[in-house]
Length: 506
Ligand code: TXA
Ligand code: MG
Image 1 (cartoon, protein in one colour):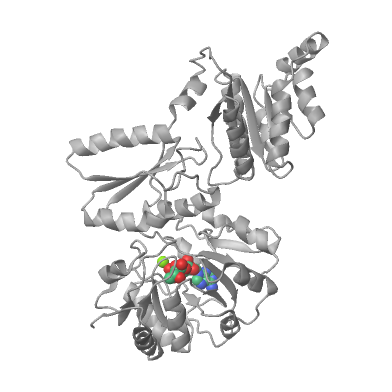
Image 2 (spheres, rainbow, N blue to C red):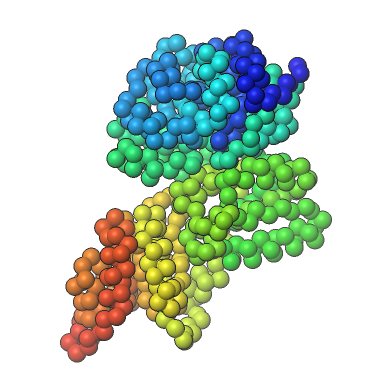
């Protein structure tokens, strides 16, 4: 079969639409990755798409629509929540799963009673759908298991000769596939595949909590109990030909470990490539480029987010990445690497563990840590402290489990208790959990600050050497004010010394 290359000119798109109508396959651009288009209402076309990709047929396809009303052609019921999300994010990188209409063939939905729908942000593709008169199913236009295609040349490299045509549009600006959000229970929206639309963004529109499918935190396995709601999450995906290793930890330590590994690989005469900045936009393209260069191994840095703000999860323009977007990218990175991840023990962490290296400092040093819900507040407070000339040691924010406050509360408390910092500040949603964790460490007196009076007394009477703050309790400005009051208050001694000594003995 000759694979025709189409431009995005109107006449070309009409020809491509004709092919889809007649049961053919045409790849199309979107803002996420290129899709492999087929008539969504034709079981025959769906089968052809599975076979061109070499994809297991129990993995359902996403159905692409060109206008919100198309939802009613595919979905049995369209809840208000779906319309609100459509209004907020379409055309854009969000896929909504709803109960399907009987006309939507099971071949397209991988045997499920639900259908995944999205309106892509590409003028050419919206026209393609409209001109075809049908809806267009579109898995990513790659050979199953290869990195997703983010420009038409990637599609050509994988599917030339196997499909009827490719619409040669722009390279994709998003770089990772859409967020898949299950709305079959509109009261309990759940993200089945993380992407660039984060749970926080969806929650802000729906005014209700948006959860992740718990299976997203597990490594895919043969275990029958491992049942992600998006069947596609079962598979190892996106694999480059090269072996890929992820190094996770504090950025300086990660880069040190990668440097050492580079030297080793060179010694062995192997070609090693490095991904140093985690960036959704270029991730898949880099995997393909390294394959072309004949890399034997890809060493990817995945620094623990938020450590330190200027270098760890810095995006391409030096700005820090939203932790939820980082999570989406890590989902792809882990699959690409077949979960081959090395946790780099930090030089600092080792010092804390051994309890050595207590050195006198010239300036005050404050250790900070947070969980996901305290991330923004921590950034704001850290910036403020830096402005006051205080050295800030950021001990991190994030583990894939997202129930990380105990880990980071303890980590920060140990750091302070070992004398590596003068004081500690921890942030979570309420300030409660992470403060509880900190107070488990001997020698730590961590007080939650909510009012100016508490901030003053925590220092005066309780000699609090740590404080906890709630990102969902205080505004950044309120929190910063409390931090200043606490820092600028003086310990009162006398009777209080005795009580603090008692506390310390517990
Ligand atoms: O960004 C994207 O979504 C791209 C572009 C082309 O639009 N498409 C894409 O399709 O990534 P695909 O087929 O590679 O991934 C579809 C994902 C799979 O993980 C699949 O399991 C899930 O969506 N999915 C599709 N229909 C579903 C359904 N009814 N219920 C649950 N998950 C579904
Ligand atoms: Mg795919």
